[in-house]
Image 1 (cartoon, rainbow, N blue to C red):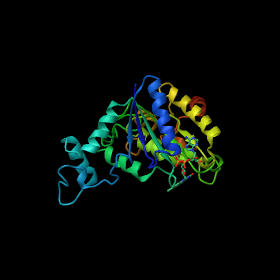
Image 2 (image 1 turned 180 degrees about the vertical axis):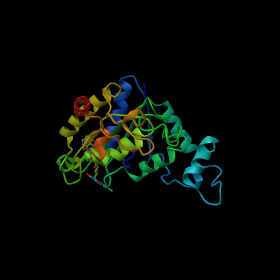
Image 3 (image 1 turned 135 degrees about the horizontal axis):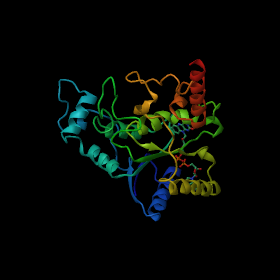
Image 4 (image 1 turned 90 degrees about the horizontal axis):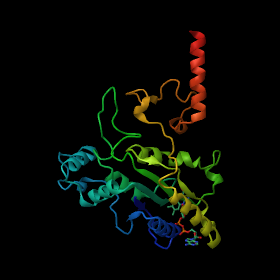
Length: 278
Ligand SMILES: Cc1cc2nc3c(=O)[nH]c(=O)nc-3n(C[C@H](O)[C@H](O)[C@H](O)COP(=O)(O)OP(=O)(O)OC[C@H]3O[C@@H](n4cnc5c(N)ncnc54)[C@H](O)[C@@H]3O)c2cc1C
């Protein structure tokens, strides 16, 4: 299989650098083909602007979405953007690897997303009407591919637990896992996390490497996070709110993940109450 690692750390001798090199070796040893987009080494341009289209802004003012759409449709994108899109088309799985910086991805990686995810490629795909709101959240041009985050944090695991002060890690990563990855179609695997990085020494590094190795070995077999599909009946269109009866009493990020036991219990309770009322 083909695996693309999009990697954002400025220092090759960092913990992230070591883990990235290990990942490449492990994946290749398992027979996969690997490409790495090492964003700092590539001197990746992080800012989205009119220069992203070879024609510049089409109108009097630069329109980030419409100019992206035109450049993508006409083959007039900046070559660095088109090259990354080719890598995404090539990949069966994509790994985004980065240190958590200010509770999110480093700016250079955010800029990769903003520029590579062109209108018509990652968004604005499919029919948008009162009946259907595009191919996204489970559908889209990247459907059928897998994605996984590899993230290191200075904070402790407890700081990112359900009642931890930083907020639960699943919540912090939701905009990346659900927004950036699931939106254009990826099946998103649970993230691989290394907490409290300042305490990584040789012994702990060996454990981290072993755990990452296991996650890489199961890249194509592990079950993805069961995010709810937009166009499979759970949402009202075009309001795109959860239908009554779906995830009752829940709101926020967790409501957009299927919890099989809980959802089935509610569905059978609904059936019983409608039979009783009938
Ligand atoms: C701008 C900024 C914002 C930040 N924001 C946050 C935040 O919001 N939340 C948060 O939790 N943290 C935050 N941090 C901390 C950050 O997440 C960590 O510094 C980062 O994850 C560490 O990864 P690294 O690759 O830079 O590690 P490094 O600093 O390179 O290494 C960490 C440890 O691993 C050891 N190590 C590295 N490679 C090996 C190896 N091959 N074998 C054995 N040991 C090794 C090193 O000796 C070191 O002790 C922030 C840091 C910065 C600079």
